[in-house]
Image (cartoon, rainbow, N blue to C red):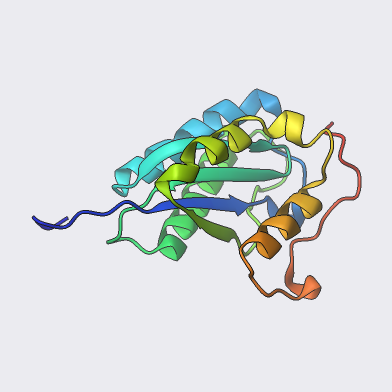
Length: 159
C-alpha cells in the first residue's frame, strides 16, 4: 500500500465444493484451511479465521484494498483445488462450485462474526447451509434468484 493509505475492510467469504459434495471431512479441513490462510496472506490480506463444514467454507479476512475479492476467491479455489488433488484424498478430481458470497462487516462486528465462524459445527446442528446462506443474503439485502444459488442438501447431518 501507498504511504498515507489507511483501511479497515472486513469481508466474510462463503463457498462450497462442486455439486455441493460433502468432501471437506474433519480429517482434512485443518490442512486445507491452513493452506487457504497462506494464500490469503501471500496476497497481502489478513487471514482472521477460516472454518466450515464438510460442504462449505467461511473465511473472514481483513481485506487488502489493492486486490479484488473476485481475484482472491479465484486464486483460493484454483490453488486449493490443485493442493487437494495433489494430496489424492479423493478418487475423482476435486473442484469448487462456481460462485461465492462476500459480506462486509465493521470492526464492532468482528467478535460476533468470529465466534459465529468458529462455532460452525454447533450452528449447523440447528440450521442447514441453505438456511444459513439465504439468511445472509436477506440480512445484507442482496436480491437473488433461487435458480442461481448453490445446490443444497436438505439433510443437516454431516457424515
